[in-house]
Image (tube, rainbow, N blue to C red; front, side, top):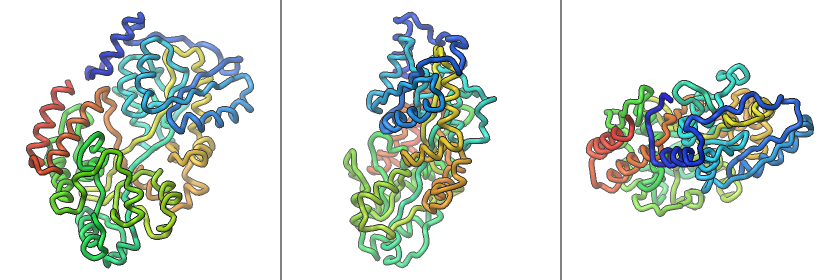
Length: 416
């Protein structure tokens, strides 16, 4: 297999696979049953998606009575280990939900069936969503839903501070953060994570908007580039100036402080719309979302999940038809109504709330430029080094140049 990057979890999975007598490149189950034969399709989906998908499967089988769809909800806290164990034992479900951070690892193990690109057209999906399913130029996952981050800000407090429009660039965002504190009396100007696991997810909006990356498209580590250094200096300046809290507790939920006005701005995902509407009704009409303030451009991170088919599945035709049902225009619009997950298929955004809701259209515009992470099997290990670099800067223990220089060396040893 062409990929050479490895991490601990892949090594464990490969060792387990060999123990069970499964080769690291898997074994094809052949064509298996035709789509119209009587059969049972096994599907694993994670978290809330697993619960909701059971209802969708019931609807699907009304028009496909020959297929029984058995959905198993899997908690995100155990999802990775269950998938690794199933891959090693050759018992992966026919269809599984996978985030971008998983796909590189399982594609490398050779347990995923390549996507039939004659049935699924890249042009139907957000580019960054499609890219999450690609590994070494081969597509293994069909985008199911997407996710990105935008800027949430208190409009009422902005007006109190003398600002009547959303910030569009870094200077305007920091000016607004300062005005919130000095003129509107907020405790902080902006909530961004100072340290800890996945701090990088807050940093991506700065890094990508400056034109920086961690690892470029050619596999070269570039986290110490001038663009990345500029981004980390800007990120760190919020802590240096007392605009952001440098001692945020693990598990901190910004929603409450956004509601009480201690925090007037934060970067959040689409689920925050529901959390604010339901949990902070007192500020209805007093907040808005805006695209990530730009430096070189406005670019946010791309997340979400894809649907994959096991290479060993005996039901690939039926699995493909089920994925088509979930990812076509109608299926995607229905899934949004059930879950509020943002559709990966762009045609689903042309009608209903997805077309009419101004907040949702901000997310759509952000997805048009959003950037997905490389499908490297040890991406979590790589981003941990960036988390450490960010923490050094936000805590005043190192300059951006020195912190990212260290991260550059560490990550180069992980990417070979």
